[in-house]
Image (cartoon, rainbow over all chains, first blue to last red; front, side, top):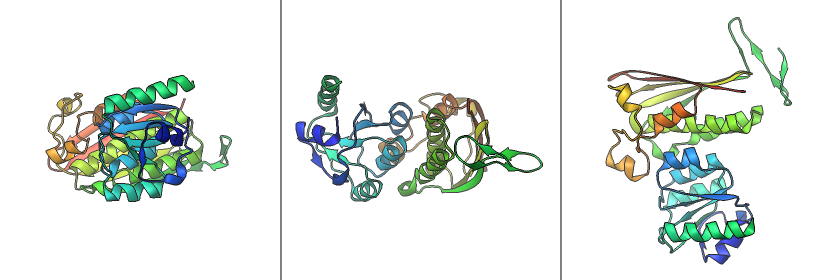
Length: 113
Length: 157
């Protein structure tokens, strides 16, 4: 399932790299501790977090995440957006809390598989 | 000189060692806006060499955590990378406060990070522990008020 499909189904607001929404999502990871995400997330994951600073882009780039979703309507910082556009990492915003968003995405991916 | 792997990589031969790639990268302490840049660069180098994905994955984790440690705690540091046909080696040297109690620093969850670092999602006390988990050889030494030296070897199997 690509990011665009997930963004449409869950009413996500795309904030960066809107030309890269065809990235394939193969799994997901939810977390705000960067070392935890670094160690345990995988390539192709959609990363769900409420961290909004630019270091999330470095992690998503290194781990080759499909994209990042910020929860609770948190908006990315301006320099986060600049970096995300440079690195072509889609950042989206959801008004849901992490628990609900994670559940919905998990269900979407499970159905697809 | 011999060609290695499916890519045309040149093996450099000196009197003492054979390596595919060797370079040093400077990391600036305190500069969170560039944190991760060196690790991203090193990852692309390892990909170009054609190393297996699991080795690249481990290398990216240990390199990133080491880079973040320099940014978070040291004034400056250097990440020395050496890739051979058998290993990926990192020698990481920083000038900084050092680690008074290495045993304690290795405990998962122990951290001396300040509030600002923690609010960003760093400083959870997982960095050194993660580095050790993903290394085949892990050697940490430190001198208080001088700096820290970390040697990491990942075997390519």
